[in-house]
Image 1 (cartoon, chains in turn red, green):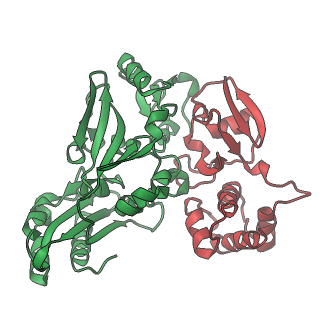
Image 2 (cartoon, each protein chain N blue to C red; image 1 turned 120 degrees about the horizontal axis):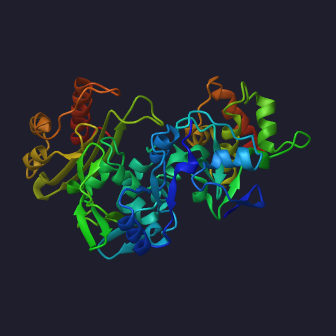
Length: 151
Length: 288
């Protein structure tokens, strides 16, 4: 039995240890916010936070998440009460087709959570592993900047 | 977009000793560190039915130890952890720069230095820096441990000289006697982030007395099946002044040690021209 914490809740998983973290989240824990894009670590759509750090959940067998804290997009806000970051994306048009958005939000969440610099350049570096197929990068950066100002 | 999880056998040793023992018992097992390359293959379905030796519980290989004559980086230390370490940042900045070009944050947070070496890609981002810092790869097997110079660890494309049953436990970087006068790492890819390199350069210069070079260490990645030091150019430069004539003559010697190919990422011609320009710019002090 693999034990891990997902969005603050203790979870156990008794299936195949080599099942990917993304599949375990979606199929066993019913957290379908995390999306699979390329399946090869290029696009970042499947990004979740593992002990606070952004990782590609399509490249991690669930056994390697044993004892870890996993955060998915479902941990941010609710439709009634958006998180600052989600509100920033809504206000600035940071989401277009939406496939990259959960991963984009989680990578940005890790970035704005650090106490360090959060400007245009640092955001672009932090988000360089998240590809947007609509190429909506300008507004994504604006969205994160807006949320960072409200920190 | 995924393999069959139920078809896999996963071995999960809790210590280095246990890892070596498990590997001896199941020599066909594939060692798994950060998984940033292995899992891509698994997602394609080509690893179904295999045994996996998951090293993620081997805590002793996750440490960075600063010792009197150098720094010992555990094989499971990630590219992110290397970039954050104050002593590595100060003494081995080219390795820090190289680790910052391995994919993006998501990959750097998972990929490990030992995994990068074991994977032995011709384009392994850390290798030119490890080559000029003259790293030693420490490996552990059932018959004990041995140190392998970085120049001898790679046997070819995706091949190492590790013997059956051996696992990488650490990479040792010796401190240099004097601080280098100049050091540069440069990776050239299709775009600034995420791209796999077309060519990659690391160089260190040590000035001697009377305005001549005491030592030059020059290495290229992606220009041969494995990382290559430019030994011919290095020995030519030793004891000379870095004037234009010397620099051009050194650049002419580049192809004694490297021989790039045409492949999906670039052409031989492009690689040679860009690499030569990079080497000349470095020796002239024009690239920081």
